[in-house]
Amino acid sequence: MRELPRGTVTFLFTDVEGSTRLLKQLGEAYADELAEHQRLLRDAFEGAGGQEIDTQGDSFFFVFPRAKDAVQGAVAGQRALAEHEWPPKAAVWVRMGLHTGEPTVGDERYTGMGVHKAARIASAAHGGQILLSNTTRGLVEDDLPPEMRLVDLGEHGLKDIDAPERIFQLNATGLPHRFQPLRTDAPLPRARWRPAGRISRERALIAAAAVLIIAAIVVGITVAMSRHETNAEVGGGTTSKSVGPFTAPGQDPSEIRVGRSIGAVELGMSEADVLRRYGPGIQRQWIQRGRGGDRILYPGDRGALTVSFYSGKVAQIATSSPYYSTDNGVHVGATAPDLDTLERDLARHQVQEIAPGEYAWKNFIFDSTDRSYCLRDDRSATQLAFGGGVSRHITVVAITDSRLLDYLPVTVTEAAGITSEHYCSAEPLEP
View (tube, rainbow, N blue to C red):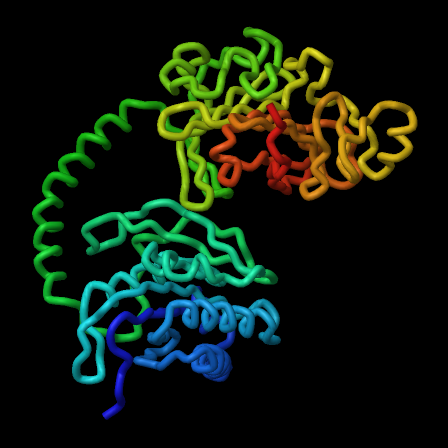
């Protein structure tokens, strides 16, 4: 009988994303690719000190005596998969979840809610993504190597788990960083474990609450049927419905107050106030890195105003209309200095060098990381985003709450329908 690690241990669950699709694509060759995936992950996990508890088809369950070893093993496994040469259009993408706890050990198995929580966290991930529980994060965050960092995705309700769990994404150099919202209702990995008896009691409570949920759904359907509905917008993790009439842009103050407002919409304004001023517009949802909220689009003759909310307050205002302008003339459609010939523009006194390699144009700092201009203070960031290619024309002007800069990038849509996201990484200005 093998000896399992005891005390405080870290669980790692994995699962192949889209395994049914891969099976259809590869046919009989799928078995070979699955075996290769297993070999790569076993080598990575065992090399980091992990012990295999179970494998079922395309799922793994490993345990590590130390949390930092589990993190190293997960990153090594993702890198091995990313570097492997898979068949064309048939790459294997694996979701991973880690949680640390003190489970009960018996019959060569672990039992307890900690195991169940680790499996739930893994099931919420996307292929290529590594998720950590708050407990695991607390054990590893001070010892992460420079090429790794943690991103807080916020609190999420996990099925059969009483309290919301704060989940963190582990980013590592060379691996994907951007994913769709977490899949908190996804099926569990198929690797086996023995959950605690407490689960059945929780399910009974959930079943009892289902009556209330069904009643709420019936009321919600009744209310929804009284509204004008349109098709859902596909892409970018958003849904929308179109209603009118529209009153913006073009019938309100035509200014951009840097760091504060565009037109009559200000950061921090309530969603109810915006609706009273502008009407319902085209209502959508935004979801990014585990955060989300309402988003309303107000189209005009030559552009649009988009207002995004978080917790019922305006978190970002963006415009693609030249109707709005700053007091120094910056607006959509204006031509900025050539981003590739800053020295020449500097000689013409169009650009001010504020620090070695940092330039300002009409007070906006050129952000070389994202190739956009940004003016930021402790409260907000005003950003000038450009189209793709060699465009020198401002495409979107946006003002974003500084607390949500990592979650609300400025989105630019090109003529071909291709979208790009622009983040402001400029440091806040000194007071």
